Image 1 (cartoon, one colour):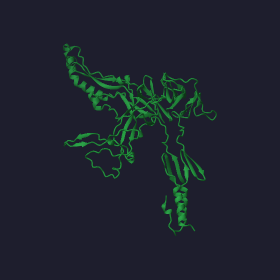
Image 2 (tube, each protein chain N blue to C red):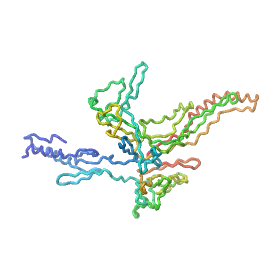
Image 3 (tube, each protein chain N blue to C red):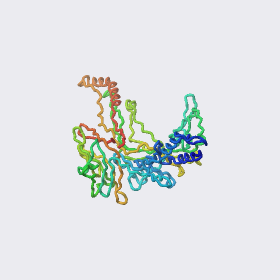
Image 4 (cartoon, rainbow over the protein chains, first blue to last red):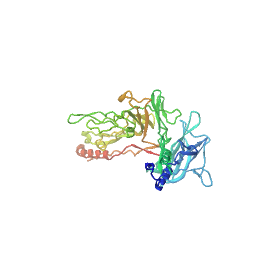
Length: 189
Length: 333
């Protein structure tokens, strides 16, 4: 703060000094930034800090009983679908839910919410991308691949625990051998 | 008429009303006001986040679940390998290194014994009052008025993710000098002892100081002495522990419940890992001659013996050029 605002007895309060005081007063106002809420009271301003804030990142999986929703995310610019509806929803349809009456879990009680892509086998570009609930990330078809978005794991209580794996939009590329076998790579976009 | 005293009181009030940044708060001053924000790092629950607790007279490091290729990562416990996602979370028991201690002694060519400098620590800890690391005995310590006031100790350990991989090594076959002209054949051998016996595919371990396993150099490959490590490793975090001022055991102090933990992360996101996985290279056959039994076969033998140096050089060049390796790479997803 500008200490020249303090005056000596007899010093004139000039317009410049007055304007400096107004600027200092204006600069001392409290504005709410990220995670902060302000409440003005006659006794002062109550500042509250919200430590935990949800981060609505791409492919965020939310589990509700035996259904899951996945927030909008893209692979090579393509939005995956659930029952042919884009995961972010459309103007006519709300974001779809992935229903699974009994979750598919492996022998260790783990399953995944994943995006499954199918590539055409000439340029290896993505033909379709769908959200699936599966108990293995392996596929038999070299043209398809699964990328995990979240792991679900059976807890001691019997409920399902959710562990988010993917936080970003994705890029995909395939490394194809002469035999026709392909290795699929995913990386953040 | 405004009294100077009243004016100054008004200025003091405005000055006192300015918000100052406390713990976890950031303040950005501007002409139109002071923007108060919560620090972005506060409460950021990323994969691999460490939670360090003093329990049962020991430090335990709990790790927020992180994934490699979408798979669980485990920690070795008494009952076996326990996934980080299990309800009863596993923990690491750290083994500490002293970054302040000298790295050892060294004799110079002139016979002088030199004390090597300590590893040191990030500058942040100097602000907390951690004492200086050991210096190279040949260096003159710069004047630092705060040095005598800084008397906290610091210890550290590294948290490392380990995954087994197939390693390769060169094997040389030397044919009989009398029957085949002492020809050298270079073969690529694949070693999977650790990959077959590893307790888990992706494991977290705690080591006092992590160093990347050395990969064979081109010279090693040229000489046929290349032996690859059987693991791919990546450092996840370094855990620094800072003592209270003047700990009772001084430089021999071991972290106890009075110390404070400061994790420093190398990895914030989940990982993917893939080996390069090239097709195994077929060994090149040495060049041989066949004169169809002229001179009772001695012509073949003589010809092959003459070709032996050429085949040696060929095998060495093949070893050098043969980049067959299963070394893997990690990347974030």
